[in-house]
Image 1: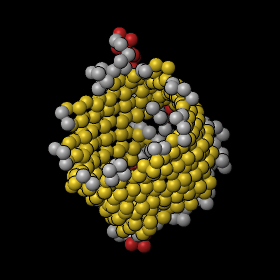
Image 2: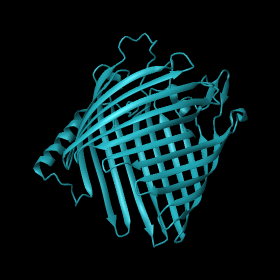
Image 3: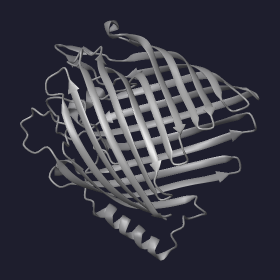
Image 4: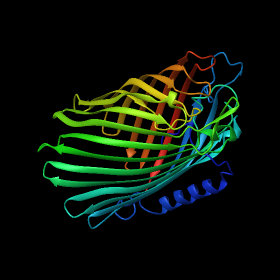
Length: 407
């Protein structure tokens, strides 16, 4: 489990969850460590301790004397993965009770629930139908000023489905629909409440080596139920975003793989055409298996956010990342990530127009799995941000240790 501050929402007494975790642990002790139903049902319990030097991502010029805290998360997870004939049904839920030593106002229950049906219709049709629902604390990263240190419970629901039709041995048609709903608990952030309905249609050519070339059209309709106050006016931020692009997924050699896409994107706002955006976005990912133990991944991207909790601004993200990984032994793995990106805030009327942030991060993790059912993880993160607006810079160091038992 990777715990982040931007998670969860409903605060409450942790005793109920802790009793459940204790009961699950007793059940594990009374039974074998193997998963139920021949690995189709898995139950896990875990504990995470995290030390964060800058919980609210405050500027170095902020007068707050002590910005850091240590928090604990007690986690219970359930996952089901079962095939029925040619269908596969998946379900899962994770609950984490998070408790802060100093900033007790951030105590909360993290909730993540999901359902998924991987369906198959004959030899030509397949796809998925899925639903997810999460409660989380919204990120502190993007805000400067009033409400910066106030917890914002964020609830997200998404229903999505895809269908793929195999025209012939080398061609397929693809279609998808999705409905995303995001709601903020903090009144100050409710102008960012959004509903996004998406549809896509595409096709792909598949080679005999299972390499793919494709094209896709996508449309996102964004609706903000709460108008944004700008001066004496109330602004409707609804938009329609359309994109046309090409995709590639190619195994170059036995040790290297490339996946990428490039799109021409246009976003049109219903009420404020001067905020319209048009441009090219891309994402390119390369994976290299250097040896049997060492792998390296590289990603370059330029994209805009579908929805962003920063007062309805369009955020264009341009960056690169490297992720080396090394298997020290079969049970010990060491990995790292180096990430650098530029965030341009475009077309906003509420005070973010012209903002440019430079964000750099380095993270590393060491995992150890002494038993099939026991997993230990140590992670570290150093992140910095500089900005062209006052008090938007910050530096943070985060260290976390996690133990998880699965049965």
